[in-house]
Length: 122
Image 1 (cartoon, rainbow, N blue to C red):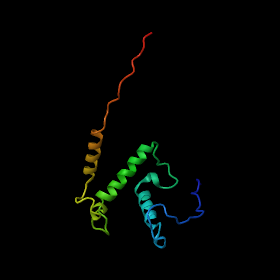
Image 2: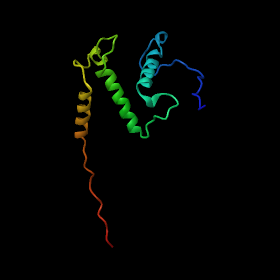
Image 3: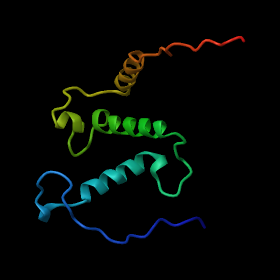
Image 4: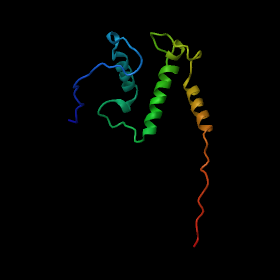
């Protein structure tokens, strides 16, 4: 049997930003988001070996997950994507659109390596 997850110790409510009504503060939205992310990406399931060896790979995987979740996937309760429901986008994106966005970003990167140091042949 492998290692177990850490046990919960305590929590406290405190304002991090803005002026929230403490009586209506809840972690349910964040916990639901965490569950959705864990269920959608194997690398976030607990006690697994499906991890990212590089932090950049993890960041890219999370970005792709949320791009799909918010712009490509139609949610049953909304009957549209969250991006369209929030007025951020007026079109339904496809994964081809997401790939084109990534390709455009990659093409715009500066690939020059700068000046090379010259070798001294002494």
